[in-house]
Image 1 (tube, rainbow, N blue to C red):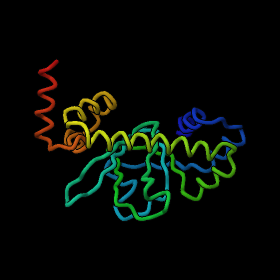
Image 2: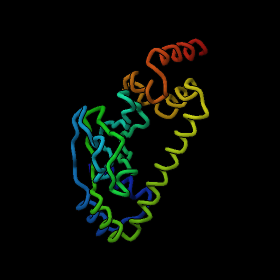
Image 3: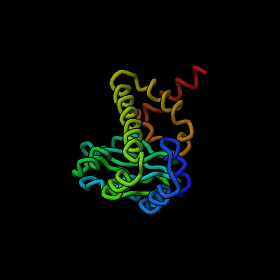
Length: 192
């Protein structure tokens, strides 16, 4: 599990042998069964995770309806930065959609990584910038594109998730009811 994390970090920054040992000592292996919560509503997000196996779903509970807004899968980070950075209670929920193996680092250990790894703060900045840019694209898409275009974008950007995520969660991510997603899928299929 640690090797895929080290590879990801070294894609962003260089690590000496001593710095690799620091990373290894600070990240811990955590297993989540399908349905387990990485973060429940109202909890403070106390860790950042790196998914080595599995799939996580981000959602909000709006008037009793779950609204999916993101997924994290292998070789991606999982965290609610809105809660993690200021250490405030979360209004968002992160749940395992599959049995998942995650390398996690606590808020306090991340500060140690930033202090002891020469380019640690650069690593954190680059990682959070990527998350921030993706969120901006997703928000823009939700307000400017039709559900059909959002579904086509989901298929393009997350083609490997189509078989791993239920149609209910995909419909929620696209912003429609499952019945509407079925009609969208039928129109797209008939176009091809």
